Image (spheres, rainbow, N blue to C red):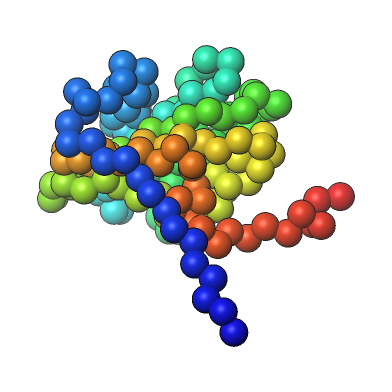
Length: 163
Ligand SMILES: [Zn+2]
């Protein structure tokens, strides 16, 4: 028996102003599109902005449904939209932010496991990590240069499934 350990690291910034101009811009777009969330059930609004390698920005916000599992997270709304509209164009960066209607979110918001798995698929598809910025309503900002593997170190990855 041996222990298999995988370590992750994120860069934490105290304030948005500490980020590069590019990162501030992407986060601001995520914050803007967050207001388009349809979240009458969770009252939890999430915005996601992707920067593609051709410079195009693709946006997503969470879209809920009365039949709960029919809704979709902001990250997958954005990623699937990028895949549908810009096939063959890699996703380079992603910013995710959130706000709740009834309480403050003071920590970086984390993508759910299903989104991380979906993000990892696009990283493999284009053979590059998606640099990820996470922010709450306020508080610190996390930057994961290595993408989804940072938060989902043991990913479902069976290359033989791809014919
Ligand atoms: Zn999700």
